[in-house]
Image 1: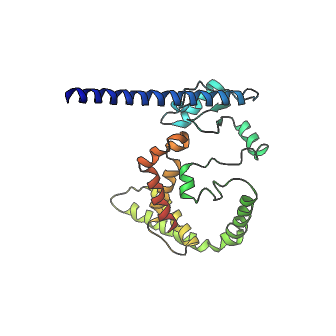
Image 2: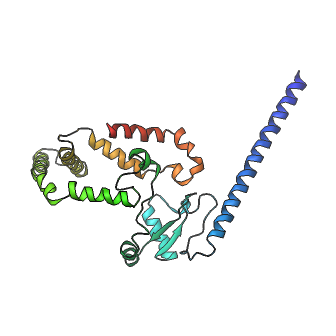
Image 3: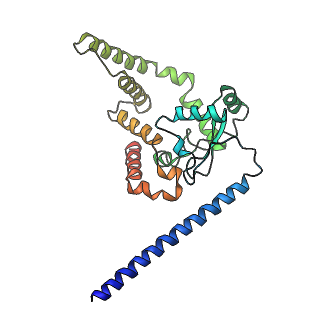
Length: 258
């Protein structure tokens, strides 16, 4: 029995070793094939300079806890226009650090740069990214913009909500006055301004205030800008399911939709 058990354990270890070696070999071949295909497709392109990349993660390791400062430091070395590869994203990222070049992109070549990348959070929270902010440019997007400009953001419509804005600003000023006259003369102005803005929007759009909208709006903003594995490594999107991030997005969507 001991011999059989030993043989079984040895065969089990060999099977696991063979599986992991095969998996590693398959991933390596797939990566090299993908890298070769991308290199051939970019041979004839006049691409901007790019910092040195690492396999799989690209330039992600060069973005620290303050990405805007990391991008500034990289631009000092590689110029006002540089190309970054963030993870395994299909679309490379062009970083512009010059006001003149940014103006050229925004005015002369605005059609080429009109679409915003749709990340996982936007697709879950905003009905698949069909809103105006994340929606792809085209005829449908143009129609949405016309409707908003005519029905929601016209001068007449904005002026019709003047009294609501006046009342909510008066409430804010009164709160600040009460705090200034009390013993605890300090206040979180950011929270108060956000609460006032949310109250104005709720009254204009929904007809009354909703206490939980401020927290819900904060959750949406945090989730839209949070790191999601699927956005940078599509083949590893299952990690977001295991960590509960996708469930968190769906819970926020259900609350927002309600």
